[in-house]
Length: 338
Image (cartoon, rainbow, N blue to C red; front, top):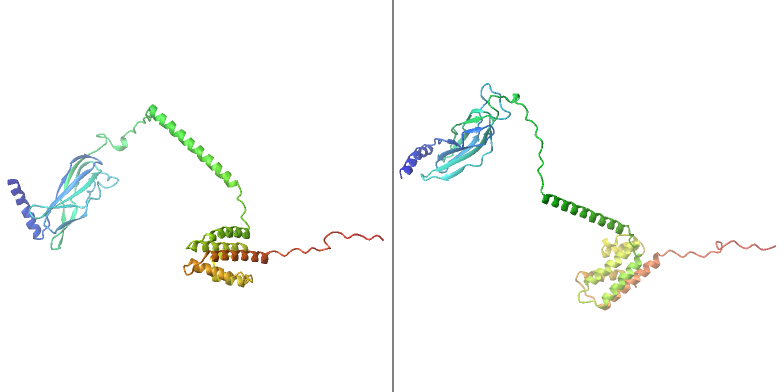
């Protein structure tokens, strides 16, 4: 009870001063004060502030080198970027503010730790610069006493010691080596087989009319058992016809629409005769494929037959003319005896 009353009596003046707009006092404590060069030290800054007030860190300060001493390669104190401060509610109604700063000294002797620069933001929004408390470190040198770095003799070289390995190490190493060799051998065999397979020439493609005939024979069997949804059948039929035209005429018929196909064939003067009904064949296929028409098995067989007539007509139209059998080239004429 007495301790709580004493703490409250200590906190109340700080809160009263803060409420009046005065900056609070910021104390500091070090986790250790006797260290050597390069050791890490944590400085903890604490203050009691009123509710809705805050403290902002502006700058951490490192001291200048001692007079007459050569400055270190960097700063005397090397700071690590601190984490955000912790603010917890105090029993007195204010807030306990704590900031931990990690630093490392890089000069020997009595090294001061100057207080950082803060800005106190009062509940009213008023900003007041404030300085944290300072501390001191006793930093010992890592060099032998009384010697300078330039006078130190280099350390003697020590032979590298290779640790001995037990039988398990060698068994595992040999097993891994065998597995690696087996994997390499399997890869070489697969690569050789792949090269052998690639060396086998692919069979030449069928001539366009033979490919069309084979596909139409297959589609004729499909037409005999055509179901309620003939869209797949007509998609395959139009693809077979357009592929034949594309290969036979060397034009991108598969990329053309039905209208373009009919028009461009007419422009080339190779439009099929009316009895084949080429435009009706492609148009009926489009109506079925896009769900606007229906087709029976008889319709499907009739369209397959029209596709056959188209192939036969185009082959007869594009076939080279027969070579006339002349008489002058048959051989030398016989000479009449006189």
